Image 1: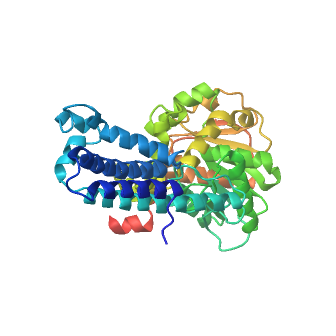
Image 2 (image 1 turned 180 degrees about the vertical axis):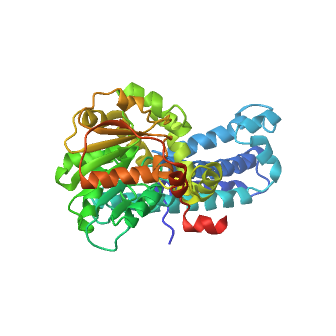
Image 3 (image 1 turned 60 degrees about the vertical axis):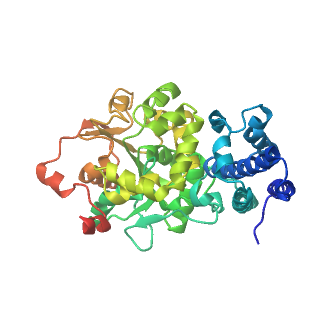
Length: 451
């Protein structure tokens, strides 16, 4: 049985009754007859607008009846203007003139209003049920999640573990690898395989709200990420590990070390976004990414754009894969496997709660920082010009994609960290041509079959 909101049922029933009265006698005044046609069309448009708002913003209209009445009044407004009933310019009033010329019968428009109202009622009832289940599970209601999460509840992190890849079927893992913003665990596949070849086990999760962990959680602050990671380590019987972060994953790694120092043997931070101030972070994050720029500027269009991408996730993933030539296809497709709240939460953490500057200045465990000499998003100068006597700094040739382009050098740094923590500042030499050939970007198996 289709559950329809009370306002939807009342509005549609009222409209049906009024139009049936208006259409019962063909000899009724033509102006009243036209009013019924345009009112029915306006009601159908309203339900489509309400459905779009719910899908893109994750929020229904506050008063369905008031909004629908206003839209109906707007649609029939030309009837109050003498001589303007079917003038061409009245199409500005919800296609007033064109709708009136489609046909003399309001029945098709009435049927359309009923169908769109029932469709909105079904989605609205599922949305409300999903949000109630989230609250019942002790979670915040997942507003604006987009895609399938619109009508399905998100899973609580306390009841489900993050999706992950591991190089060992069971037992403790030596290294925990954390990906960055709008990425997935696949970014660490080259390093994970090289570590495995040397007998080092690694755990590579999709962070809360990203990749295959997209349906877990409704809040995505650093403490939420830490809670989810601690649960994963417990489930994998990993008491402590060397934690390696890339980009936003560096902030999560430091947050884990601050909250659970006993779980972190040492840190390796690759391309950490170290900002001196919130203003600098907003300028840097919005410099070359339109969506990030809208987020940091507080634009409401950002949530609409991200939610639209969630609703059209498959074509969006295909478009990103075609445009991103520097990364493997599967990793590029994972770039849209997140929700608006998880993306926004990650950026907010870097803008307002970034623990990286204070940590690099005074780390609590042995820390190695790996920088890309040509990284526009996390410039090496941000760390090289910082007082950091207590951390080891490596500068490698490359941009922000060091986990893909410098996998052997990062693997070597991780293995050295496992053997013995070191301190000091050094600039790593460029890898030899043979090493570069060995560690180029590793394509996932599925992509190799396509090429």
